[in-house]
Every structure is written in structure tokens, then in C-alpha cells.
Length: 515
Image (cartoon, rainbow, N blue to C red; front, side, top):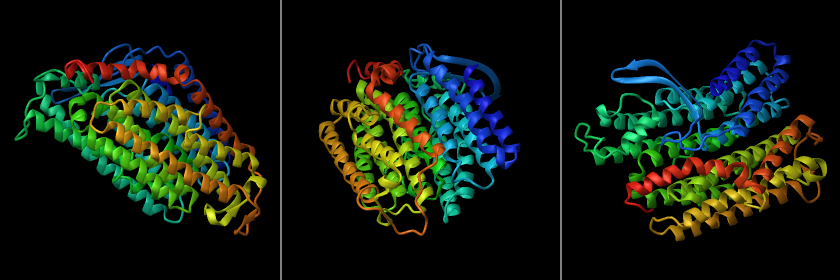
């Protein structure tokens, strides 16, 4: 019942904050958010899952209760965590707490509603990573969209309504496409399944002959179409080029705390779903489409980095860099190797921490200078040394500096994808590695222009030292980034492998013994 307790604490906290007067909401929300954070850390430290939640083994904190019947399918409240989902739950609770603390300065209207939505979104995110029944999972998946839509649309920038509607339309249509693809598989399985439990569906899809024809589509074509539909649905959320166009507008118009959550956790919903659905349930289709998927990953890496290089808005630079970084996750997933799949999962957590740090830094800089334009700033390191140091730390983590989380994640992905069994894997990996050079280019350029040199600000506002509650989230994130980069295997990778190795083992078996 630990996952249920975690979700309940977030929901009750959201309701309590929502009814409080505005002046009490910030500190109350922060205090409440510490409880699910402490509980998730306790769950991680006592975590004893040794398998994959969809493919067997020991699922941690498992609970299952019959809920209702839809036609011939049973729907149950089915929850559980493994080495893939557990780190993402901790990431969600950690970033929620830090984002709430970082909201104290920029959010000064309708605070009760803002912090209530933040806690509601935290509950939904825990549900996405913990649910093992499709209907329950889909409810949480859609529930995440609602608070983010209002966070952008109410507390965002000048074009907030446009950005919020674009975000909602893109992601909602993507959900429908994914939904159609998934239920194509469910109806194709027919009597082979009796519920919408994801483990049962995953096992059935790995049974020869279980997937039958559906209408005019034979089993093979049905599996292919379902894979493509689900891939497109999840690719929008990641986002993978060319489904990325909603992301820069959402990031630029969103308030800083929402950007932290969007880049840090919400994008991971897409890669998490790709791993759970496409690459776990339909490995043969994933292997057949490995080359085009890997090409999309490499294009995302290079194109996202080039777009970031062309920007002059700090927030837009970090937004496009997220497109690039999530390309590494895609490349690692499609490799189907121990380091590839494990590294992709590690990269989800690493990118969540690093992108959260950089967006938080941009927020602090904007709060004190009232501009995000690189050309309007110079020499901020003299006025904001702690923020400048945090920005430099986040930039070097993004570039893959050793002993930081970004280095470990990208190293695992490169080793895994270089050793992958699809055609041109070495060439595609080499091209992906070139993305690091471009990342270094735009981050060094933006740091040199904004932080160093003689002080200059084109705005009429006085640049002041950031408040303590602004810099504490930055320092906490740096500690996690260094800890994860210094002890990657002990802190995360070992647990991740327990859940990703069953994917590789069963996939290898289905291909006749080797990948």
C-alpha cells in the first residue's frame, strides 16, 4: 500500500493547499511535499524488486484489487514498482519539492491554486510510473495534462494561452493515437487475455499464435500498425523530431517551476512508455524498425542541438537541448543491449536532474534581471556567484563532465548502442557522439556571454543576489548530479539492470538465442 499512500498524501496535500489562503500556500505546499519525498526515498532505500514488472520477478510494493469489468476484460487497481519505475518516482517527488521551493519568488498570484495543481500533478506522475493496469495507467497519464495545461495557461508568459492550447492539443491527439494502437493489440489478442493488466498483455504478446487477425489486418500487420501508432503517441510526449514543435513554446511560456517539471519528469513519461509498451511488448517489431528508430534518435540529437545553437533566449536554448538529450534515450532503447537499455533508463533520471537544474538557474536569472536574452546580459557571475556556479555545473553535466550524472548516462548509452546488432550502429553512435560537441558549443557560448566579462545589463532593473530559497534547489540538484555521477552503479544502475535484463533475455530467446 506504499504507492497508494504516496498518491493519497499528494492528493490530500493538494486539496489542503487549494483551500488555504494564498499567503499560507507556499510554505504549506513545501512542507507537505517533503512528506511524499521522504516516503519515496525510504521506498528507494528499502526497495527489493528483482525483476521486471511486466515480465516477471519480484515487483516491489505490489498491490492488486479487482475494480470493475469492461466487456470480457477485468480492470483492477494494480500497482507495483521495479528498477525502471522506482527511480522515476523518486525523481518526480524530488523535483516537485524543489520546484515548489523555486516558485516562492516568481509566483505571486493565485498561489493556492498554483501549489494545489503542483501537488496534484505529483500524484498523477506517481500513478503513471506505478500503475500496471492499462486503464488505471491511462487515467493517470491523462490526468497529468490537466495541471500542466493550467500552469502554462494561467501563470505563463505573454503567449501562454497559445502555448497551453498547443501543448494540450498535441499531447491529447497523441494519446488518442496511442490508445487506438494499444487496443488494436488488445482486440487482436482476443480470448488470450482476460484483463487489461500490462503483465498479462506483455506475456500474451510473447506467446506464439496468441495475436490473431483483426478485420482485414493479419497478426503481423496488426502488430506493426499497433507499434507505429503507439510509437507516434509516445514520440510526441518525448518529444522525438519531427514531433517536437510543441515543446519550445510550452517551455518558453511556462513559469519556471512548470518548466522544471515538464523537462524533468513529464518528458520521461514518453520514454518510459516507449520502453514499457513498444520495446517490451513488441521486441520483434522494434528490431525490424531499429535502423529508422535509431536514425530518428540521432536526428533528434543533432537537430535539437543545432536548434539550441541558433537561439538567443536562455530558456529556449535549454528547451531545445532537451530534444537533443532525449534522442540519446531513444538510441539507447533501440540498441537492446545491457548498457543500451540500462543506459537509456539511467539517462532519463540524469536528464531530469540536469535539465531541472538548468531551468531553475534560468528562472533565478530571469527573476533578478527580468530578461532571458543572452545579448542583454554580461558578467552576471560577479553579481550572482552561486547561481552562476550552479549554471556552470549544470552546463558541464550536460556536456558529460566525468563524475557527473550526464557522463555516466551518455557513456552507458554509447557503449550499448555501439555494440547494438542493427545495421550501421557504429556509424549512428559516432554521429550521436558528435552531438556532444554541439552541446559544448552552445552552452559555452551562452555561459561566456551571460556570466563572464564586464558586468552589463540592458534592463532597467537592479541585479541583486538571489534569495536562499532560490539557490537551495540548485545546490540540492548539484549534490544529486554529482552523487549519481560518482557512484552510478551502486546508486541506480544496479537496480535498473534487475528490471532491464529480463527484457533482453526474453527478447534474445524470441530471436533464437542472440541479439
